[in-house]
Length: 272
Image (cartoon, rainbow, N blue to C red; front, top):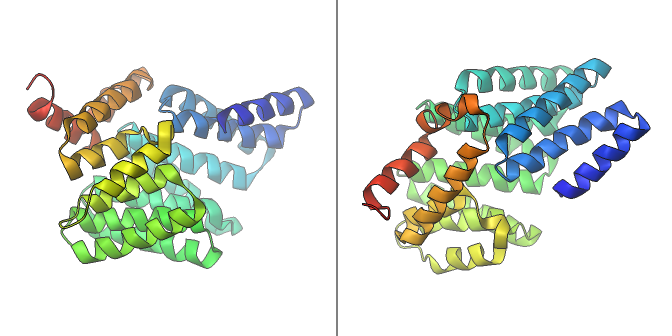
């Protein structure tokens, strides 16, 4: 997808279509973020936001802001993330554009959990799920369900976690969203009594798109197979190396997932 977006961006730059240039600049930022090229993602998101504001594209502004908010959370900058998400939600509600609002609620839920506010995290995730159900956004519904399942699992509500994760899996199978299936099955495998074989198979089926920090660490938690922890640590190292230099420390100190991987590697890694 990233290559296609880059070609479209080059075309719209040449043709002078500023609206589509802004849209595809943000899209290329997404492609960079999916590949953990976070410095490039930040550059594209900021350019996409600048273009959207220049031409008065409020929906494009909201989409760039929600992606910036999620990126700043990944970079361990929660205050910047909250600022971006709050501004995005304000625009969405002002102009009535629900697509970025669902993603913003999802990202705000992750941020609330990072700050230790589980109740608010679950409330925001459920609000995002309700909105996405209303819109019939099946891919977004699956994402929200996976988040809700993970929140329940992390706090001991195993049955609620199973219910949400199994519904997310059913949607993912229908849509053939293989990387998302791999992560969801890995989360399900981490619950007592669940089989990890389906999660391992889902990782294979996802191919290179399944090679993410989140999937590999979830599989480590489910299986305690060192190969998954090793892969998660290598992917995290790549993520940090390709992040903006100013955030390379904060993303290791302020993001719970990253801290957990480092702690697990210190205790169970190759040199332990």
